[in-house]
Image (cartoon, rainbow, N blue to C red):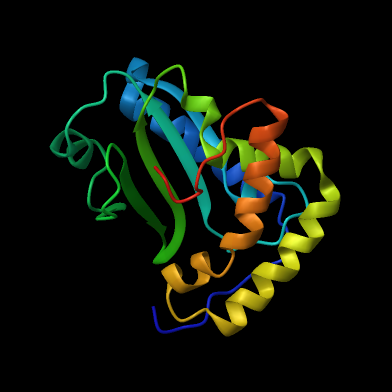
Length: 180
């Protein structure tokens, strides 16, 4: 990615974009999709964000990559190799613009204790942190916005602080935010 990462003001249309994609995913995966959740900054009211809607799909049974590549056709979705185990990531472009990240994961009893959900829910419950995170994101986009990995890693301290607080509040053991 050669362009700087662009952080936008919160847009309520992100929720509509999620709902439309959720409906599409439901029709593609049927009963295999146990949970379809809007995660990431676009799911947090008033949070500034990259205008890309992140969606977690908890599936059961969790099938091989070839199955999901056949479901998420290459005309709209591109598989992204992440190196993460037991997770498949697809990006979706709409009219040539990157609009969604689709994460396919196994659904199990621990699904909703994943750090991504804890982070989202904690920020929803603590709006004072939303503004702080927005400032961190804008700064990261300007100074570390050459690659998505640089940008993401530059936010680690804040993300870890929030996840630690959320895990402590729920009585869950602390965990490095980069553990999958």
